[in-house]
Length: 104
Image (cartoon, rainbow, N blue to C red; front, top):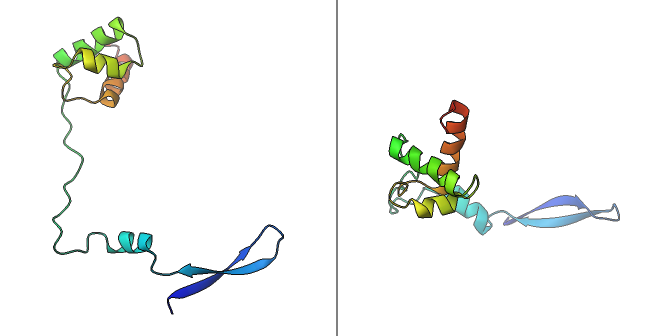
């Protein structure tokens, strides 16, 4: 039996029977994920935490002075060399951390 029925109430409060396909493509993808023995293992996307250098922190401080809080992409583009390995979100989070610690 490929299909399995289930009951649903419609807007006029009557019950109707709808059909649900057991092996829909979205279910197959999630159920069979990682079961393909030929596919290479998926690398872990997260990398190790890299401590911030004083040079990077100084670039963030100066960038906030030059632009303002919230202009993380502009700060990153101005300090390309110093902040090359950091994302805009990382820069924002670091500035927030520096403010909490009184380093800004």
